[in-house]
Length: 101
Length: 204
Image (cartoon, rainbow over all chains, first blue to last red; front, side):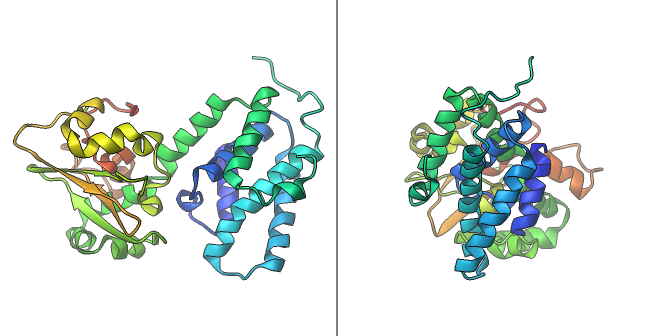
C-alpha cells in the first residue's frame, strides 16, 4: 500500500475528493504515520483497515449520518484504529522487519 | 496507550503528537519522512482544486467573470464547496499583484488549496505580509516592478481569498488540464509569479 493508493482508498471510503480529505494538520500527520508504518512492514495495511472499518461502524451506530459530522469523526476513527493496530500488533515490543539500505 | 479507552477523550492533535514521539524514539518512523509526505500533499494534492479553477478561468471568460463575482459559487460549480465561509477571488494583472495572509491566525481557503503550509502560519509571514509585502515576495524569489501595485488581503474565518495568477506566456497551445498542472499553490497565495521560477523550484 503506497501513499497515493491509501489516500484514494480513504477518500473513497469517506466519499470525499482526495484534495478535501484532511482539514487539520493532525489528520494528515496520522495518515502519514499509518502509511509509513505499513510501508516499513510494522503492520499490514489490511490489519489497519480492518480496525478502521470496525471503528467507523462503531461510530455510525452512535452518530447521525450528517456528512460534515461524519468526516470530522472519520479522522477520530482513523486515529483510534491506528492506536489500536499499533497496540494490538505489539509493534513497540517486537523489532520490526526493517529493510537495510 | 495501555488502555486506549482512557485515551480517546484527549485532544486528537496531542495524541498524534505523542504517538509520533514514541514511534520516533523507537526508531519506527522518521519525522523527516512524515514532513516530506505532508509537504507533498500540501503542494500537490491539496491545491489541485484551486488550480482547476484558475485554469478554467484562463480559458473560459464567462467562468472567470463568475469566479470574480462570487468565488464560493464558482468553486461550488466544480464541486469544491467548502464549509469555511465566503471565498473571494482576486486577480493579478499587469498593474496589480495580490497576496493573501491571515494576520491573526491561519485562515486559509482549505477547500480549494488544501492545508496551509507551515510558513503561512508563521509569525514572520503573518507580521511582514502587511508591513513589507515586497520584502516577503523577495524572500520567495519573486520580484515585482516598482509600478505594480501590491494588494494584501487579510483573511478571516468568514472571508477567505484565492489569488488568480496571470497565465504564463507561451501557454496558448495548452489544454485546460495541462494549464491546471502549471498552477502552483504558492501562485494562488500570491508569493509566486508563474513562469518566473525555474521548474520544480520549491518554496521555502
